[in-house]
Image (cartoon, rainbow, N blue to C red; front, side):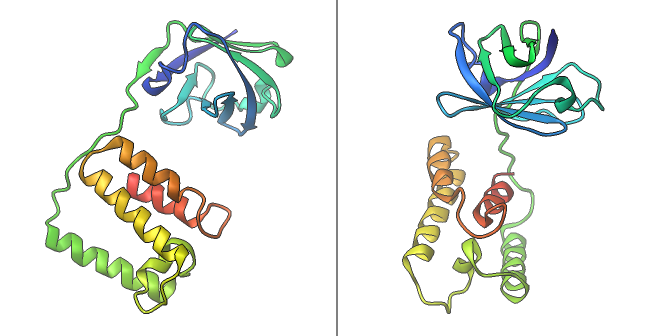
Length: 200
């Protein structure tokens, strides 16, 4: 039996006495994603990684790879507040006794002046237009390009996201983010990179 060391606080509501079924979605050296029926991910991580939202840190050796424990994509799992079982691999992870890590976002006001911030944003815009690809999210930076539905959709979604962030409105941030996820070219879509940067 494996032991959980830390559990992200946002998982507490998901891990109830009711048993949920899931499936191992993907396995990496230091992370294993379990997808629950209701389209929620529970991420198992090794001590080598920092604590993440929706993650359970396992009490294993830091250099131990999760694939060596027996996790494989496609395996069924059974999850409740006390444990995670993966019968096919004869694995059980005890959750009781794990410390709860507060995964709620921290909003910290910048100490940089608004004038300096605007100057820096203008520099980033100029560099992106000069050296970057203007497909995806970057297309909104070029005011000379003809408007189209795709560009307008991105502009409206980014404005909505910015308003949600300035109002500290988690629901609005979530809804606006959902509209941007997956937009743009690349193995990691451009909008995903943008979202990670802005939400960090």
